[in-house]
Length: 236
Image (cartoon, rainbow, N blue to C red):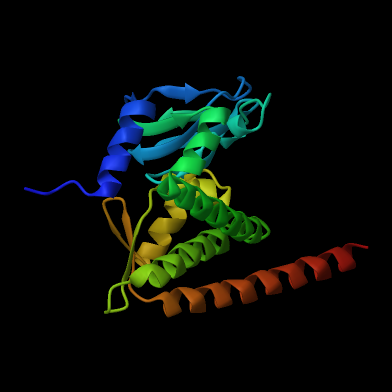
């Protein structure tokens, strides 16, 4: 029988007081609504999406430990995205005053939130770098390299193989391409042996191989740009 430690007891108290459960498909909040609560995901996955006219774009997929809906921490703010539960999810929900109180009294939650904000800043910088690329395949390759490098820092398999829990939807949100395009590019990378797919896990057998491919794609993109410039010059 496993004994409950202080951390488990504190977690249980937080869940009993602030815990919320949502079934798969539930909309937790909608874009444009008043933001009243921030959420710290405990179990399951939540999709954040943005509607632009008739187009629906995934912003990111939230996983356990992630903070989302944090616009509620600014008084009078509105939601900037819609959140949909992909699985049955469990969250901690805090309004502005409660969040400040929990941060002051729960070092564990405060530490998790700080780590989240640091990671989100790093992810935003990575995404800007990816979105600046013109070639779709380059975008996907760089995103996979970034995820693999993070996993490597966290302690990868001694054999050098890196396994990522990553769905096409999450990759689509990261690179700014539609899911079908991402699936097609991933299939090409699998056919060339740069990655392997197991369910929703992407296995990177050799990170250096991905880096080499990115270098080649960069050269190809540069040559394409030079050819287009030359073509425009001749047209003048």
